Length: 295
Image (tube, rainbow, N blue to C red):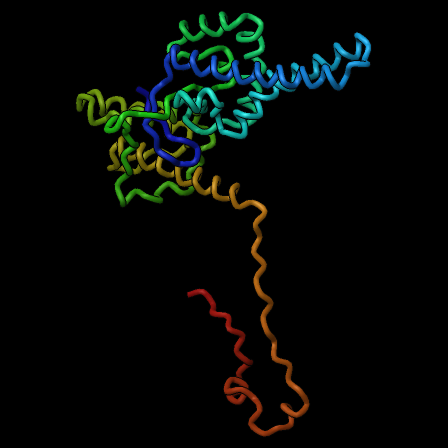
């Protein structure tokens, strides 16, 4: 079992998908793609009956690229790794660190899928999945992705434990860009299993992972902070940043225009009328603007 955390800071208890479930999902996807390709080809046959052989060949190639190749890429990109077959089987494609895939990941998987699935009838994909320790086909290896199960039996999902309250926000200024996805995954796997490990083994693993994270970030753990607490606080900080980034992306383009302040224009009558000034003006102070300086 592999517990992962998505890039949207959603903690999930996920297991790597096995070959039978992946094969079933692929079979469903191929049936859907084949039906769509047949309908498109039939429509093109009626619409381009007067074309010559060269034009018909060009239209056929374009239809093949549009449906069996571009179609799955678009579906995986828009659904964040859930095709129709994977949705039916409870599977999802994620990055190596558990985050949602993007267009470049779907593009690499789709391009490699033409070779290892369509051209070889899935033989290369099956062999690669059997050889890989995590059941990845070549498209997953080159794209840096995994196929995992989203449906986990009740009681099996485990989450990364939160850091101590006094460490929350302690590493807000830490540079986490140099930490690779493989190291994040190793840290999260340790944190979800640290209570199941022998005390000595767990402490050794935490110290080793803490040294690696500190080397990547350039900031060692504060004195007296256990390595496990340091790792939990750093992972929590990354989840917070991912959540903020996801919120900014979701609300991109939604700008708020502040209302214009209402300015009272004094007339000539106000200027000559006795006692027309405000209390501030009467005391020799400028009119109040409503601005409160920071403490």
